[in-house]
Amino acid sequence: MDLSYTPEEEDFRERLREWLGKVLPTLPPKPSPDDWPARRAYDLGWQRMLYDAGYADVHWDASPTMRLIFLEETEKAGAPYVGANFVGLLHAGPTIAAEGTAGQRARWLPPILRGEEVWCQGFSEPDAGSDLAALRTRARRDGDDYVVSGSKIWTSHAEVADWCELLVRTDPEAPRHRGITWLAMPMDAPGITVRPLRTLAGSAEFAEVFLDDVRVPVANRVGDENDGWRVTMVTLSFERGTAFVGEVVACRRVLGELARQARANGRWDDPVLRRRLGRLNAEFRALWRLTQWNVSEAEVSGGVPGVGGSVFKLRYSHARQELYDAAADVLGAESLDLDRPWVLDRLSSLSYTIAAGTSQIQHNIVAERILGLPKGR
Image (tube, rainbow, N blue to C red):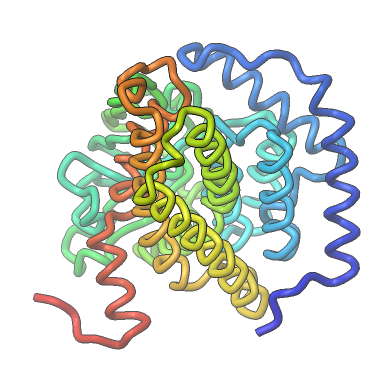
């Protein structure tokens, strides 16, 4: 498999680098992490700048390789993270682009690209996290609407979202994977209650969402009724396949900073630490090559990442935790100071073996869909 870049792709890289070099120094200071309305405005403003410069549609109207280059170069340059735009740009948007009708694409994609609307993800429930197919939120058909009741948890950016990619059970009698439907729910609909959740790291980008007879138009259904599990697999393939690309680049940068810090504070004299950092360097180089392989595979499969994304997500989530454990070794006693770099990152890294499908789920996917092993009982 050819992992090299074409002249056209390298030209795109150079033009993007030049634009980033000009525009990044003009950005205003980032708002406080706790001020989500201000963070929403900042993130949408950055998305609008990308749109005006012609880079906004790279997440679904460009080849997977162009998307990879974009994520790599923006992270290397220190450009703003997608932030509140995460679900819209990296989950819901690509799913609607792949599975939505022409009318749905025309309605929802342009506002995401222009930095006008924010999406949240309504998948997990209190009793249906890793076992997502056990979800109980019900949607009853009533004329041209679905009437939705239930609750969701760990709903990303719900407190500032305009729309929610929502999974509901539309046929409780069907086998559990076959009675699910994917809906786009307006977050200003009557009957929705949002309660923010504070994480171990002190942030509040997640929320509980309670749904009490919320009416969602049938026209907002993406895919067929009861075909939501298949549509969800498309969403999760983007989440596990390409959504973490920029974070791999960030981890490689952090690794270099850790080595410099270790040399400065004397920790570099520890041969065990040096070997640990060297192994992590090899680990992240291999993950980057795996990312390129997954992108190359997506190029020939219609742009949707394959199950190789589960291999990546499984190993990356553990490597990220190991990276920030190494950061604690470099910092020593200072690793208890929440104001030090990398300390909050270490806390947030604990969630990576759970988020986007637990490591146990990824092991099952790799075993069954890649290795062809029988399903566990």
